[in-house]
Image 1 (cartoon, rainbow, N blue to C red):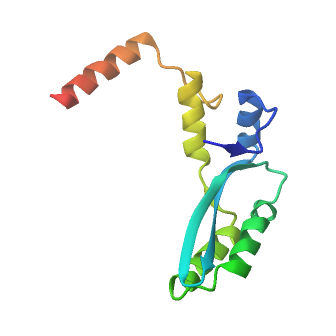
Image 2: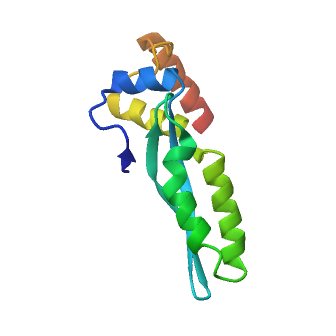
Length: 133
């Protein structure tokens, strides 16, 4: 998984940025070659709260706008969807990325998340075993 825009940021910096309104997004783009049309998603982009999500999507917007239409009928259909995705700021995958970071760091992603005590963990294990049986 490649995430653009998080270079030199610590996990705490990411948490602070996301709490301030930063987002992890994926943009879609399409292009057509003669009669074949291709629709793809970009890598994940981190957009800080002070940055424009549309501005980050501009290369993908322009690619789709100029090269997406030419395949019939999917080129037109894909292009409309991709342009809409770019205009609206991409697909927000912030929750998924932060959950992934949480799993990798073995800790809460946000300060307001509560650590599970040993007693609560035992209760959850009992509940899980009951559900499995």
